[in-house]
Image (cartoon, rainbow, N blue to C red):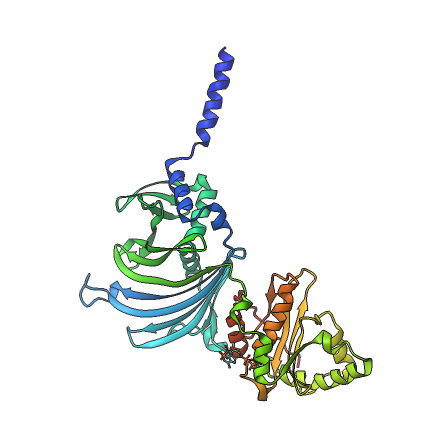
Length: 430
Ligand SMILES: CC(C)(COP(=O)(O)OP(=O)(O)OC[C@H]1O[C@@H](n2cnc3c(N)ncnc32)[C@H](O)[C@@H]1OP(=O)(O)O)[C@@H](O)C(=O)NCCC(=O)NCCS
């Protein structure tokens, strides 16, 4: 009997150990209110747009007086959950201390942060040296970016809290609301909705010393079954310093070809025909070779227009070499490599490869100078996308130089989302 009781009590102990704490209940309720763990976990990539206003409380006319309005910014960005990286493109219009505008991008990865463009008057030596201007983030800026990105990704933070219940610990109420701590954040919940209402970090300010830095959420919107706070007000010791308004948030965005005009119709209006490489290369061998010989100098000329740190040689390689490189190699998927022909003559090409892992990649897109601005490149890429979509290709990548406004514009319109940049190094042997 004694043994049975002992077994029973240890079983009860086990049961009581698995009962969620009050703090875990708050987190689980918030996860449910935001759309549920399954929906939150299904968010792999996020695109967002919005605007933000900033105030400087330490620039008031009198001590403790009204905070001075500093700047208004618009931003547009992308987060990839798997690689824990993000890119945000900013346009910051400063009103104080002097009117000026900074246009730049912030790229944040787990190990490093990078700024493309000019983001301050006090440029670092690296920013001055780089062309176009760019510089690495300081360790402090990177750490702050990590903290703020995690705070801003409310759904991911709630999910992390629910998956790590042992790190969710009690905290004193915040503004009369129940709160918990997790990894340095103090999270308060709205008792009526269960949603997180305020997330605090304990910060240090060089004038005020220890301060509370809070985000306060409002204006929750349903985005594909997941709730998002579209308004975020940031308070430093209770004073408003930043107000962020999201205007557009999307999860796992996909290229939706139905949003675009039929590419053949765009081509018809431009007066060109779109054909696949497969169509053109299927004829008699001498005709195919004649066409390849005609195509080579055209695409070489276009390739020389691709902005690149190292200019391409003026002349293409000999035909036999070029044929292997451009027309026969694995770098060319014949059905998704599209040519634009005017009166049978090539004026544009998008060269697509489909890798062994099933991902497609654009090696090159080009349109003859006289034919640009007519939608031909867009049409060729839409045709490639149509073919790849029909084949079930799920990922279509490309690499564009930061300064290639035309190609980046097309890819952006098509719904491409940027990855952290690739930095190319060159060493010349004189
Ligand atoms: C990039 C390139 C292929 C674009 O060809 P194109 O046929 O002129 O482009 P499109 O007419 O299809 O442009 C469609 C959209 O692209 C964007 N775009 C085109 N040119 C642009 C530019 N100079 N700046 C910003 N966006 C631009 C716009 O969104 C445009 O849409 P709109 O019609 O609403 O303005 C062409 O400029 C080119 O051959 N450049 C040299 C080679 C190169 O750099 N290739 C890309 C890297 S491999």
